[in-house]
Image (cartoon, rainbow, N blue to C red):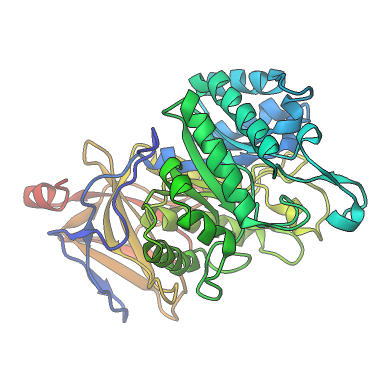
Length: 464
């Protein structure tokens, strides 16, 4: 099933060689010059999401936050859809908080990604501090048959009530962490809940788009054994119902390109379990600029590379966590993921997100001319994105700067307009000739409008 507005495209390794050639004017070997996408994916803009936390919904500025989401060019906004907020009496639902949100989503033509989660005291066992590790009593997630039925009934009612918005429904958030599945994660319990909930939603809204498990820990080259992911993939009933597997891919200081080797691990596990090959959505990826984290400049640089890496990996949706800082403590990682500070200052990453959206809105990935080595996460990446009218742009970067300037030459193409940097600034052009386009690469992405230099080039390299 295809997520409306989001295309699957083709998987890594499924590209076909294009007729255009390329020459790399540096001592870097490429496995292939150009690979043409066999079937065109969806508009890049449709894959861009950003996160609002439930804290945001309790503030007076949440409408302004939605305006910020529009300004950066996000198409989807991920936000908590909290069970205890909406079922305060058994079997009676108060949607007023989310009705107000739905109205503002509709005005701005934003699509919600609603996270169905949070334990409800009406349908869950209280855990004291000895069980939960918290100072205050907390409630366990739904475990018994009655609790699971209550959660599924509530989720189905929500899906029916908000059907017109075409939400993406995500079942729980990070159930592989104690903070969201107290007192300790239990993959079997989660899959039981997710399967029943997905089935309940699809019974009342058959075309609802449902994802899970929002895993905090995806398999990696360092640790491929992730119990939650394995349990979900081997559950035939759940995999038959879900429309996409949702993963969280925070790198915690690693370069964005390292995610490719982890996706390879995930896909190998999925193939080994003979699981259905449904799309992958990345529902949390961000980098914190807290005291021990990234600089704001690096956060911005890596944001663009992050989204583009996921596009190359055929990830149907990428959500940046999060839009606005959640706290004021510069020493706390969780407080400093925002594109915007709590005082309203726009970080460079805000400009990077907006530039990416503006540069590639209306474009789809057409050719992978070069890409970094997925195993080492190092190297040069040159991607061609085109509009339906065959107006094209290059997005290019290299992971590490060499001692001498790195130039990349694409034969048969010319630069047709200003080169735009990752923050929206104009960059100087390199000398051009009548036979090729020459790019001067850095670790920051640049967007370069290009045009074919002959009719033959237009008829072959841009052929769908």
